[in-house]
Every structure is written in C-alpha cells, then in structure tokens.
Length: 150
Image (cartoon, rainbow, N blue to C red; front, side):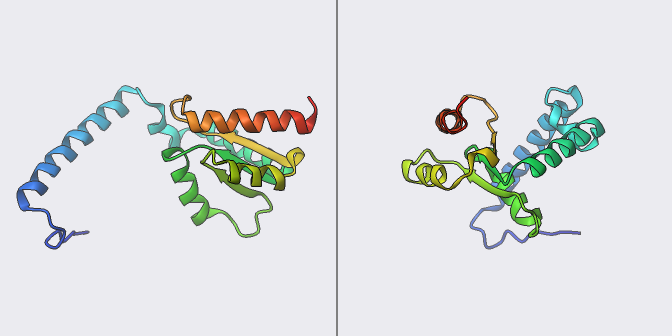
C-alpha cells in the first residue's frame, strides 16, 4: 500500500481534510462524466477501431516524413513532451519538434531548418481557438503553401 507523509509539507490536518473532500467531489464529477459518455476520451484505451486508425496514421507519417512538427501550447503538449521522452525510440528516424511559442526567433529557426516536403504538421488544441496555436498554424501554413507552391 502506498502511504504519503504530509507532516513536512506545511499543510495543517484540517486543510488536508478539506482537500480530501474536494478530491472526492472531483472524483464523483469525473465518474458521472465517464458514465454519461459526455467526454469520449474515457473509453479510448478500449477503442480498438481508433487504435488501428492511429497505428495506420502513424505508419503513414513515419514512411512519408522525416519531421513531425507539433504546434500547441501548455496542456496540449505537456503529455506529448513527457511521453515522447519516455517512449520515443532512439532508433526512430522521425524527428519530433514541438513549437509552443510564437516567438519570432524560434519560429524563424524552425522555418530555416525544416525540409517542408518531408515535414508533417500536427496541430493540437483542446478548444480550437488558442491564439498562440492558431497564430503558429496560420504562419506555418503560409510557409508550407509557399514552399510547396500550391
């Protein structure tokens, strides 16, 4: 059994008890959300059809591109960053780049180093209207169109 020693964390017993109540309330909300089907991600680990689709897209990206450029910010890329550090195989020929900031210097650097014919762009945004992500997407889309002369 896992036990936590909170005696040196600076919180009083009453504060921890209040937190426990909040955690229980949050667990109830999440359980109801999962049971109602309100958010589909709860069942993703058991969705074989989506797993097969993801594997097919992954194989296609690995075979056609040398770089996967992910555009997103904050929570949209934190999980990817953590999982890629833990699970990205060293022998993987696909280079992963994550661009979170519309900072002109870092955007210009990426623009110069990428082979745009061999770069796949993946945009991640929970809301779809995160200004930094939209700005990056619009910028890189213009470059992609110009470089590929569509």
